[in-house]
Image (cartoon, helix red, strand yellow):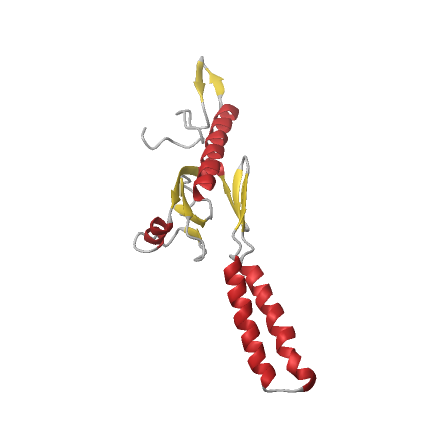
Length: 182
């Protein structure tokens, strides 16, 4: 099991709240009375709420699926997982980007994980998820994906005429789909 939250760094909070306080002070200087404190009571909580909202994305890997915010990916469809550093993420999301890819990217987080999918019913070729710990996330997804495929092939196995057939196609595919290599 793996958990991570894509929260903002403390220095982003400090910078944003500092700039907001400066803006509120500028507005405060131009007014008097109770209206003078209005910018502080409105702008600072709005900024804090916006910063919290930007850092709310949770990542969870369980035995069966990967959840990123509201999105859910069953691990049986994971073909490969690649941990990316900042340069690899930049290249994958820049020149090599696929418009059908599912991307949860936070610019203040350097690392990322690319999850290549093997689902013929889904046009999404891969997911790219920002992560502060891309190696740990890739390891968790990879190990649970292998366990998910092994568990699925054991559940789908049946004895047919003295031979073992896995899945519905009888070709030994762990997912019940045809093996592309034959």
